[in-house]
Image (cartoon, rainbow, N blue to C red; front, top):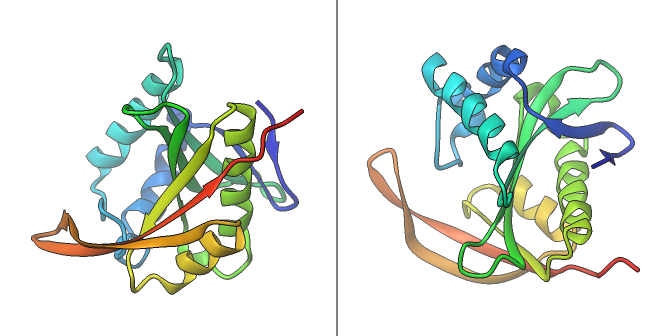
Length: 176
């Protein structure tokens, strides 16, 4: 599985990634619109263990992949492509970047690579949700070809309160 773009590549997580993951996953600004975090060290180590375990699962239904900056080789974020249990030809995607890498088009590159992975896996469609206040993520999802299809009222319970989400989806063109 080769997933490389101009500025980044996606690869499997490994145990040595824990400090880098914890650096962004413990940042309140990074996780404010997410349904997890900010992480404690224990949360980050558990995440890495789960990511490694899911990579070895057969059949594989969860692709937790590190975002690595090509220029530096540093882990600067993470992605997820999760096949839906109810219909494994459809998946949900997500991504997170360390704050110091925001505004460089890396979220778009990561989402584009996940769409490419979806095509390699012969999926029919991908969807994503984001917080209505997360304007940057809405832009990324639209730029990668996803269409806004709905407003989910009070669909996630996060840090003691119900929050709304926006739902985006796109069909995946099949590779020849």
